Length: 153
Image (cartoon, rainbow, N blue to C red; front, side):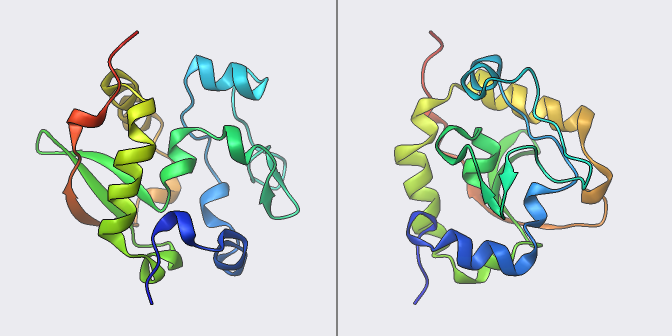
Protein backbone atom coordinates (compact mmCIF):
# COMPACT_ATOMS: atom_id res chain seq x y z
CA UNK A 1 0.00 0.00 0.00
CA UNK A 2 1.37 3.41 -0.93
CA UNK A 3 1.98 5.78 1.97
CA UNK A 4 1.86 9.56 2.31
CA UNK A 5 5.28 11.14 2.69
CA UNK A 6 4.80 11.84 6.41
CA UNK A 7 4.09 8.15 7.16
CA UNK A 8 7.16 6.65 5.48
CA UNK A 9 9.95 5.09 7.49
CA UNK A 10 12.56 7.54 6.18
CA UNK A 11 15.74 5.76 7.34
CA UNK A 12 14.68 2.50 5.69
CA UNK A 13 13.90 4.06 2.32
CA UNK A 14 16.70 6.64 2.33
CA UNK A 15 19.71 4.55 3.34
CA UNK A 16 19.44 2.03 0.46
CA UNK A 17 19.82 4.75 -2.18
CA UNK A 18 22.94 6.14 -0.50
CA UNK A 19 21.23 9.38 0.52
CA UNK A 20 21.66 10.87 -2.93
CA UNK A 21 19.70 13.98 -1.96
CA UNK A 22 22.19 14.84 0.81
CA UNK A 23 25.20 14.86 -1.50
CA UNK A 24 26.77 17.27 -3.93
CA UNK A 25 24.77 20.41 -3.28
CA UNK A 26 24.03 23.11 -0.76
CA UNK A 27 20.28 23.40 -0.31
CA UNK A 28 18.64 26.81 -0.19
CA UNK A 29 18.04 28.19 3.29
CA UNK A 30 16.76 31.61 4.27
CA UNK A 31 18.63 33.78 6.75
CA UNK A 32 16.12 32.77 9.44
CA UNK A 33 16.65 29.06 8.69
CA UNK A 34 20.42 29.48 8.74
CA UNK A 35 20.21 31.30 12.08
CA UNK A 36 18.05 28.48 13.51
CA UNK A 37 20.70 26.01 12.35
CA UNK A 38 23.50 28.12 13.82
CA UNK A 39 25.40 28.46 10.55
CA UNK A 40 25.99 31.14 7.93
CA UNK A 41 25.65 28.63 5.07
CA UNK A 42 24.92 24.94 4.57
CA UNK A 43 28.11 23.43 3.31
CA UNK A 44 29.49 20.02 2.49
CA UNK A 45 31.96 17.78 4.24
CA UNK A 46 35.07 16.52 2.39
CA UNK A 47 33.11 13.43 1.25
CA UNK A 48 30.65 15.82 -0.50
CA UNK A 49 27.77 15.10 1.90
CA UNK A 50 25.78 17.71 3.80
CA UNK A 51 27.44 19.01 6.95
CA UNK A 52 24.41 17.86 8.92
CA UNK A 53 24.50 14.24 7.74
CA UNK A 54 25.69 12.03 10.60
CA UNK A 55 25.55 8.23 10.58
CA UNK A 56 23.27 8.37 7.52
CA UNK A 57 20.73 10.54 9.34
CA UNK A 58 20.03 14.26 9.38
CA UNK A 59 21.30 15.75 12.63
CA UNK A 60 19.04 18.82 12.25
CA UNK A 61 15.95 17.00 11.00
CA UNK A 62 13.46 19.16 12.92
CA UNK A 63 15.15 22.39 11.71
CA UNK A 64 15.94 21.42 8.11
CA UNK A 65 15.03 23.90 5.34
CA UNK A 66 12.01 23.58 3.08
CA UNK A 67 13.99 22.01 0.25
CA UNK A 68 14.95 19.10 2.49
CA UNK A 69 11.47 18.85 4.00
CA UNK A 70 9.66 18.41 0.69
CA UNK A 71 12.10 16.05 -1.04
CA UNK A 72 11.54 13.90 -3.14
CA UNK A 73 9.06 16.54 -4.26
CA UNK A 74 10.11 19.95 -5.48
CA UNK A 75 8.46 23.15 -6.66
CA UNK A 76 9.36 24.39 -10.14
CA UNK A 77 8.20 27.32 -12.21
CA UNK A 78 6.94 25.71 -15.39
CA UNK A 79 5.67 28.17 -18.00
CA UNK A 80 4.86 30.71 -15.30
CA UNK A 81 2.98 28.30 -13.04
CA UNK A 82 4.27 26.90 -9.75
CA UNK A 83 4.17 23.14 -10.18
CA UNK A 84 4.78 20.22 -7.87
CA UNK A 85 7.27 17.80 -9.38
CA UNK A 86 8.72 14.51 -8.18
CA UNK A 87 12.42 13.83 -8.69
CA UNK A 88 12.62 10.60 -10.69
CA UNK A 89 15.99 9.74 -9.14
CA UNK A 90 14.46 9.11 -5.71
CA UNK A 91 13.36 5.50 -5.18
CA UNK A 92 10.81 6.63 -2.58
CA UNK A 93 8.55 7.97 -5.32
CA UNK A 94 7.26 4.50 -6.09
CA UNK A 95 6.27 4.06 -2.43
CA UNK A 96 4.37 7.34 -2.10
CA UNK A 97 0.71 8.17 -2.33
CA UNK A 98 1.59 11.27 -4.33
CA UNK A 99 -1.64 13.26 -4.06
CA UNK A 100 -2.03 12.55 -0.36
CA UNK A 101 1.59 13.58 0.21
CA UNK A 102 1.24 16.86 -1.68
CA UNK A 103 -2.04 17.65 0.07
CA UNK A 104 -0.33 17.03 3.40
CA UNK A 105 2.59 19.32 2.46
CA UNK A 106 0.20 22.06 1.34
CA UNK A 107 -1.87 21.85 4.53
CA UNK A 108 0.89 21.49 7.11
CA UNK A 109 4.13 22.82 5.65
CA UNK A 110 3.64 25.45 2.97
CA UNK A 111 1.55 27.74 5.23
CA UNK A 112 4.78 28.35 7.20
CA UNK A 113 6.42 29.86 4.10
CA UNK A 114 5.69 32.92 2.00
CA UNK A 115 5.50 33.07 -1.76
CA UNK A 116 8.58 35.36 -1.58
CA UNK A 117 10.47 32.54 0.15
CA UNK A 118 9.54 30.08 -2.60
CA UNK A 119 10.52 32.62 -5.28
CA UNK A 120 13.90 33.10 -3.56
CA UNK A 121 14.32 29.32 -3.35
CA UNK A 122 13.68 28.93 -7.09
CA UNK A 123 15.93 31.89 -7.94
CA UNK A 124 18.75 30.37 -5.86
CA UNK A 125 18.54 27.16 -7.88
CA UNK A 126 18.35 28.93 -11.21
CA UNK A 127 21.75 30.43 -10.37
CA UNK A 128 23.26 27.64 -8.26
CA UNK A 129 21.85 24.56 -9.93
CA UNK A 130 24.45 21.85 -9.33
CA UNK A 131 25.87 19.78 -12.15
CA UNK A 132 24.37 16.64 -10.66
CA UNK A 133 20.94 17.72 -11.96
CA UNK A 134 21.92 18.07 -15.63
CA UNK A 135 20.79 14.62 -16.74
CA UNK A 136 18.00 14.07 -14.20
CA UNK A 137 14.31 14.30 -14.85
CA UNK A 138 11.22 15.08 -12.84
CA UNK A 139 7.63 14.02 -13.18
CA UNK A 140 5.24 16.95 -13.22
CA UNK A 141 2.42 16.35 -10.75
CA UNK A 142 0.10 19.35 -10.52
CA UNK A 143 -0.05 23.06 -9.77
CA UNK A 144 0.86 24.24 -6.28
CA UNK A 145 -2.06 25.65 -4.29
CA UNK A 146 -0.57 29.13 -3.88
CA UNK A 147 -3.39 30.24 -1.61
CA UNK A 148 -1.77 28.31 1.26
CA UNK A 149 1.38 30.45 1.45
CA UNK A 150 1.85 32.62 4.51
CA UNK A 151 1.56 36.36 4.11
CA UNK A 152 4.78 38.36 4.34
CA UNK A 153 5.36 39.53 7.87
